[in-house]
Length: 195
Image 1 (tube, rainbow, N blue to C red):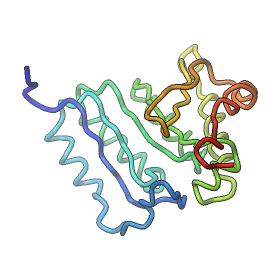
Image 2: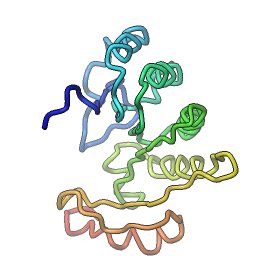
Image 3: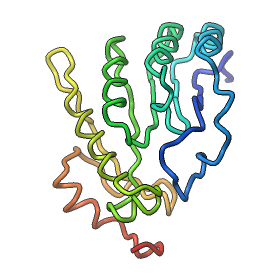
Image 4: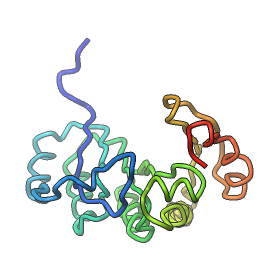
C-alpha cells in the first residue's frame, strides 16, 4: 500500500564545507543560491506532515542562521519524530548549541559525526590536519548535554565499515578509551590500501 504523502525528506542546506575530503568533493560545488530561510519556511508549511527529516550538506553548521532554520523546520513540522543531522564535527561549539536548541522543542536529535579511521587516515581522507580531534571534541561536547534529570548519551555507538558495504564492526556504548583500544584495531585499513 502506498502512503498518500511522503513521510521522510533529506534536505541539503548548503554545499559549503570546511573540509576537503577526497571521498566527497562537495566543497568543489558552487555554494551560491542556498535556500533562504523564508523559502525553507514556505516549504515546510506546505509539507508539514513529515515525521523524519534529514539535514545534510556540505556542512550545515556553516549556515550562519542554522538555529533559526531548525526552529522554522520544527515549528512547521507537526508530526516530526526524527530529526537527523549530518556533520563533520569541525565546529564542536556550533554543533553543541544546535543540539541544545533542538532539545528545547522536546525532540532528541540524531547527530551523525563523521570519523573515517585513525587520526592519520581520517585527516588524510578529510584533507585537513586536526579533523579527527575536532570530531572527537564534538562527541565529548554532545555527551555534556543534560536532559531533565538525565544525561543525553548515545544509547548505541555503531562503527560501520563502508568499504565492504554498511557492515557494523562494533556496537556498544561510546567510550573514548575503548574506542582507541578495541575499535580502531578492528578497522583493517591496510586491507584497503591505507596506512
